[in-house]
Length: 447
Image (tube, rainbow, N blue to C red; front, side):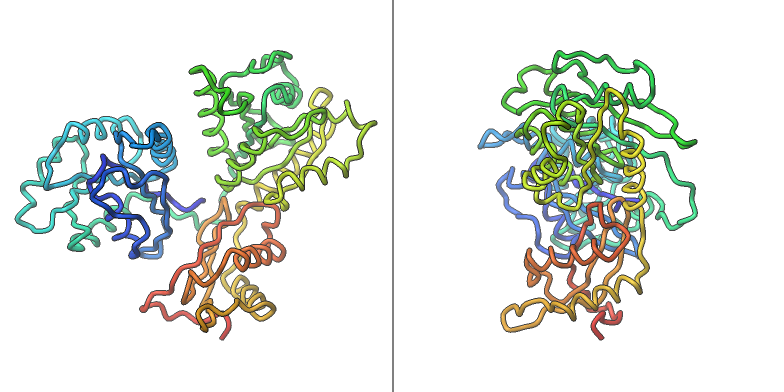
């Protein structure tokens, strides 16, 4: 399973970023008395009692941004809430309940996810009675904390760990149903693909762009296995998204990408790569989703262009997806569809693969010996050990002495080694470098 996510939410200026830095043990998010400093989501892996979670800081709900970015900030908050396994709802004991707190609480009650209410700035037990008024917001669990005074962190973690989904340690568990999502700009043949796949007119097919306006789930069987295919609306440039229908189609397509196991990114063989294609691929990258670049309607151009030309064209257009496989199909006739689905299954298995800690550390040791990291301020950065903490995507944590000393080039080198040598060569890998704690005495990989 992926690393569980814990999102910190609340109205502006209640101390969300202070809570984030306090729990992360590092000053990562900007803390300021001015409301609205946090706009984008800020995330950090943290570890407690052998559980790794991804902590996510968000902007203030209800902020009127001075740069007219309110809608963008709200979209980021919605994404964080949607992806979270647990929500930390932060309120301010000194200020008491405000109308905006009540609005946030009402919003969270509509979300079927566990919520902990953190009464921040409860710096002293004398303020506990004042904090009790937040029970009126209808959140079952209220924890009185102070990021400034480091109060009740252990109590918070005890409740948080209890609410996390169970750790997935059973490698012999039955393989789940694979969810594949078809995305692409308008009229690339997604609905035709679905209909051919299930051998039924399940989706409306038309030459009019934009026929599909919602994400549609279609279950089907192949070789005795059950699959879920998700057809999505065709997308167009953001500046062309004028109507509510277009806006919500975009939101639903993005949500479908987030919940899919494998993404099939469709291109029209007779059309050049567009800006919409690049935006979609970037979203797939940002979500760390296994992907196949699928060139559809290949029968229309096969006599005019060589396969390798399209391969080279896509590799040049999407250099950060060099590890992603490319498939050529004809959705109308079903040519190469089964081969494509078999490859999607292989990517699904790769995304769920685990590597033993011993094998991983031996590989990292060889990588360090072959190409040591460059000096940083006359000191050699050091990696002590490596561990895989999650699957879907495979997530590797390297414990080191100076995380900031490992530049982008060296991180790309390490990712390349992991991809070349391990069993997940065609799927995204999340790589984190963390400073080793003073109480961590595990052996060095280069010992």
